[in-house]
Length: 344
Image 1 (cartoon, rainbow, N blue to C red):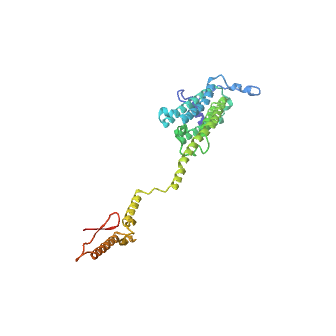
Image 2 (image 1 turned 135 degrees about the vertical axis):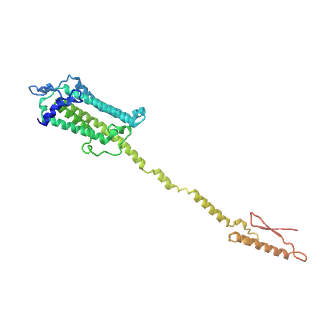
Image 3 (image 1 turned 180 degrees about the vertical axis):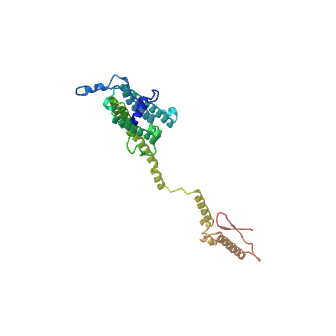
């Protein structure tokens, strides 16, 4: 017995309680193509009376409308963040919701495919192999996309303000621009071929069409989010022109230490400077004070010279014998004048 027959025998003997047992041992009710020309000859391959068919069609259209509406509302109003108090918790809450409605959509898809007629030519082993390859490729794209993006990157965390720090260029994004949506459509197509369902093939095309329309809204809005973030970052990095113009218009304020040093220098210089008001141009004897020499030493020597001159004139003009009493010399503190005070 060949390996394929042994595997088929094992799969046929699976108990009904095994999850997804109907995938390995599906039950078919075949339909044939009618006689004649036109589309009407294929009417027997579809049963429009089944509610599972329309439930799946509605669910496929509902899912992207739901998560795009919720995400855009969150970006503008922060509704979920205000309720739960954290954008990260809000992102995980939305992730659980999207995952749940996606799993419910897949459940409706299986019901719709099993309720529709099968087409016998699709039972070829080559079609079975193609179905398995498409399903595995689709799941690879979906799972690897989630691994590369993480939870916040996969489930619209950027609408909550949790932005990616860099663009993901690793697999599968180096192969496809939207690998998650492509992978989902391939998984649906592989399932339809596995169940030999022509209606399932049409429904997988419906899934891809809805994703294409959703991308026309999601792509530009996501680019807008990152563009706004980039402009904000560039604005913070640019220098402030008003600050630079102010710096050139006004000199830098000197430090306190430099101000104190300048004050000390001016005080030291004034100690050795002679006030011009100390000189009296009317008194001949004060010619020493009009000298441009500065310093305390020159002022003291000039004062001594005046005292000696006054003492000499007093002795020459005294009456009687003996030395006359010299006049007492006084000098004002505020002015450099010498006045004679009679001591008689």
